[in-house]
Amino acid sequence: VTSKHNDDEQYIWESSAGGSFTIKQDNSEPLGRGTKIVLQMKEDQTEYIEEKKIKEIVKKHSQFIGYPIKLMVQKEREKEVSDDEAEEEKKDETEEEPKIEDVGEDEDADKEDGDKKKKKKIKEKYTEDEELNKTKPIWTRNADDISSEEYGEFYKSLTNDWEEHLAVKHFSVEGQLEFRALLFIPKRAPFDLFENKKGKNNIKLYVRRVFIMDNCEEIIPEYLNFVKGVVDSEDLPLNISREMLQQNKILKVIRKNLVKKVMELIDEIAEDKDNYKKFYEQFSKNMKLGIHEDSTNRKKLAAHLRYFSSASGDEMCSLSDYVSRMKENQKDIYYITGESKDVVGTSSFVETLKKRGLEVIYMTEPIDEYVVQQLKEFDGKNLVSVTKEGLELPEDEEE
Image (cartoon, rainbow, N blue to C red):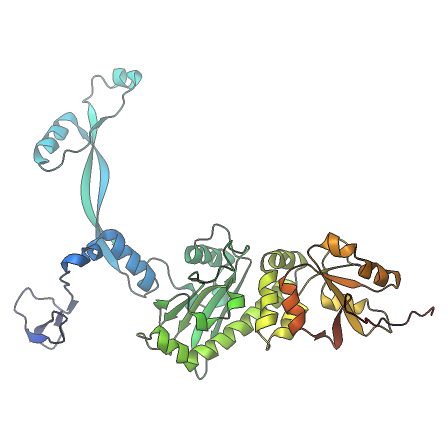
């Protein structure tokens, strides 16, 4: 590492990574000011001098650093020259012969250009500085200044999704700790959403714009693993390890805030019936898993559940819709579990209740069994299975 300060001599620090180092005055080419780092690569580490690998590392860890990172790359371009020049180029070219192709091969062109000198195209190599971190950290800007197109472009670059997001939440938290976050809900669930043990990289953790890790399990609960985005903390140390993160109190506060904001985002989506229908088709399993796992937000999540029922026809209804249609003397919410809407709809249990003018909710997914275990009641009304032995129904007015 060669370093020069305006008011001091130029020094060089050297080490072979064995725990010791030397510092001495450097009399080689003066830097002017600043720092130059030269790395000697071990024989088995030469992949780290390959252009592809360097670009990969910079994109992963330093894509959003505030200053430009440039790499000198070799490129090729086509150059049009006359026959004589091409011959000259050919003589100069000792290592590699350039590819030469005729321009204007078709006969008409040849006739027109007959009196002109014949042109040829050759490929020449050149080097240039390529900026590797052009994507700017959109989350550091004020949300009011960012257009939906900019959010869309950023979402695609972050996730490699081919379509835009369904909803976005951009916020910052200040006070005892500071962080900014940008969260997206995609339009569709990935096919492997519930495949465990697969490294998920949906929330990327940054510390002061430097990428630290993805798949940070402590940052968001498993049932919200479909949420994508970035969290940029001002308080975590840059060299934090996975083990340290597990014990870190800052992360617990970040997690609590993220869950709260995702709940707000789901509330916002629910305001638009069509949008919510799209969301629920993709992520209903996640909502139900949340009722099983997240006791704090169970009540909020329950309000967002949707089911078919004996009275809802082709539209799904919420538990609140059901409660609003309950008979005056009805104290419980009735449900039946089964493998499909058609199967449960023709059940004799359902027929009995329908005759009495009572509505039955159809729960047709295996995960619904877990939902009713945790969600014993909704809005002060108990959830009761119609297949339960000794089921007590409210007395019919006629009786």
